[in-house]
Amino acid sequence: MSILSLARFQFAMTTVYHFFFVPFTIGTAFIVAIMESMYVHTKNESYKKMAKFWGNIFLLSFAVGVVTGIIQEFQFGMNWSDYSRFMGDIFGAPLALEALLSFFIESTFIGLWVFTWNKVKPGLHAFFIWMTSFGSLTSALWILTANSFMQHPVGYAIRGGRAVMVNFSALLKNPQLWFEFGHVILNAIMMGGVIFAGLTAFQLLKKRSISNEARIIYKKTMRLSLWMSLIFAIFGLVLGDMQMQYLVKEQPMKFAATEDVYTTTGNHAPWTIVGIANTKEHKVQDNIDIPYVLSILSYHKTTGAVTGMNELNAQYKKKYGKNIDYYPPVNTLFYSFRIMCAISAWIILVSFVGLIMSRKKSGYLYKHKWTLWVLALTTFLPFIGNTAGWFVTEFGRVPWTVYGLFTIQQSVSPNVSVASLLTSNIVYFVLFTALAITLIGLIVRELRKDPTQVIEPKFKKVLDPFDKEAF
Ligand code: HEM
Image (cartoon, rainbow, N blue to C red):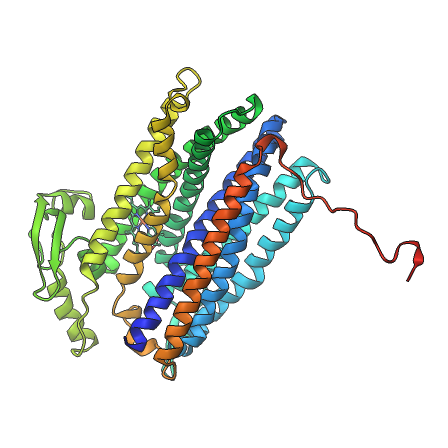
């Protein structure tokens, strides 16, 4: 095992794990904010109980997300010091804004939200959760600003072998940022809907005797969540498609790899549904193709050639140097992309059919266990979809850490050892597994509570040593 592969494995492991919680938190905060706003608008107590009950699930994911995020940042200094030296001037501003502004907003308003139920006017209380949601959205914006620079560097100059920021607004206007941000946020809210619908399905499957009031709460949650997952999955798909068009122009190598295109196609590009990339001989085998479809996907018309990886590799060798190959891991990209898109289609289908089946007149969804099981099991799919999405984005920029400027090979710390990396990998793995088990345990415990009787955080009366002026 090399230092580089261990450092990469560690970053991938921590990122994938961290990103289980990021969209979970963003999506659930947004939906809880809608629930509470419905209460403010309708004065219907069910919505208030919904917001409190599901709000507890959001709080749990927030807490774990923070811990995993901190571990992420340690690694820049530990394993990627040369990368940090190169990118420090660019990364510094967005990361500082994230910590000082967004995290500050998020944590302040979370505190206000948790401790002021029934103490401030309902409208003000709902404002607190909207501000929490706003904080989490801007937090994602700053992190993705840094990430987008790696995909598409803008607003910089190279001085003394380092990237120096010369135009901060160019970083914010980076088109890559707005595609990434839009796609991540829309899918995060979709994920919130899928999680709440799925957990509701688990509740209905499990609980034999549910009070009428609790049933109303679950049914309202189900409808709202399915609407959210349907609407935001469709928006997410539309944005994903726009992102794909952008890749065709800006990162053609990544695009060609997601579609298994080694040799430049003719004017009517066929689309490979399945195939195996022979990465040694640089060709595709056992493939099933559909004529015209790749041109349609790439340019929204039946004509248009797609440049193949072999031609792009030759171009990049001329431009950036001959001593490395510029092919990304093709099979990973090809199948990750298909998994992500299939999950999107499945969620749209399930949400749409779920909404029809859960209408008051039919109620089919609640009368049959299999329908509830389908929703319950769908809960896990957005986690896989997000991981597949990041695989496309990040494996697709191989061999670069910063596209066209700095390679992965150049980025790793010169003085980190295999032993220290192995140890930290094992420690993180054990820590993450323990955190995941704790979180699942806490969510299950929270779900056992009756949503009609959600306990408000109250301070117990404890003996105060300063009472009666004893001290
Ligand atoms: C048919 C639907 C979808 C399409 C066409 C699509 C398209 C894309 C594309 C082209 C990328 C790579 C962007 C880049 O490298 O710059 C991407 C990344 C990503 N996708 Fe999707 N996607 C779809 C559905 C989904 C779903 C359902 C999820 C979540 C469950 C998801 C989550 C992500 C994430 C987290 C990323 C990485 C961040 C980013 O670059 O935006 N995608 N998607």
